[in-house]
Length: 346
Image 1 (spheres, helix red, strand yellow):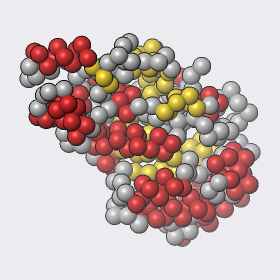
Image 2 (cartoon, helix red, strand yellow):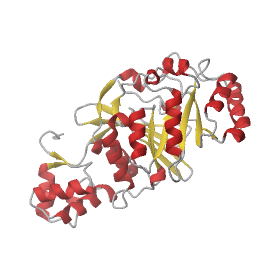
Image 3 (cartoon, one colour):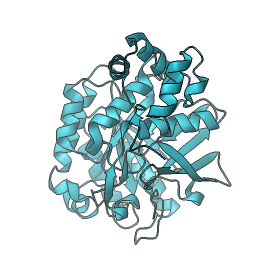
Image 4 (cartoon, helix red, strand yellow):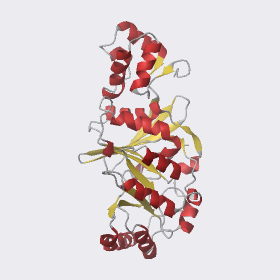
């Protein structure tokens, strides 16, 4: 695939591309043109970049690598307009990406790492361990590939695929900036969501930098004892600290934190859990996203429908007092293991 001997420029920012063009003897304006071709027009063949000189196009062909991911396989859901892509990277490692179309909404779920190191007990990706962080170009190329191969325009991007995005903070935010840039993919900041299990220093950095993207925190328990068991990271930064940070995020102009809560049978799905969760969110302006568990080969199961409904009803009954909004997300593509927490490769 030649990536070791060629310059990898996919994933460079506009300023970086301009500097790179200058370094090889081209004008900075060439960097602006190249940025538009790579991201706005989503072109990866230099010979198709028609307003560049033939000499520059030939240089790009001979000396750069513009493709960072290569399709291995794809699986389409039988019941929903959902596709799961398996991509091979230049070093042979693999990641998964999911495209979900629902009416006019086309959401792409993007991976940020090969595997994950955080050991959330119910997550298939965590069983892989962490192999490495993705490069910015490998993150960006996931979205570019989907948009080039699915007719419906991408409306939303969620960093909720394989990996913990905040453990690859700089590259994830750089990719998000390319998605958001009007000269890039021109996506609204409110259509880009970054999810974290609760890495407090990175949440604080995200807030201090006044990032405009949406932030989702995976809560998944209403008490520290339960969260310690299923999410070991909680032993470092507990629930109260995480909720306090989420409350700070919601103070930013037109920003509202989203807490995600995966319902696990017999673990965090009781009426008492629902009441405790509601009390935790008193005076926190937030969205509460309830996700019935998507089963993998592990020990955890999805609660039955009555338990799910009772849990949700308790939250709804108490939300007027507490101010949060309750949403229920039934993950798409479960029949192809494309749901939340199901992404993993051998």
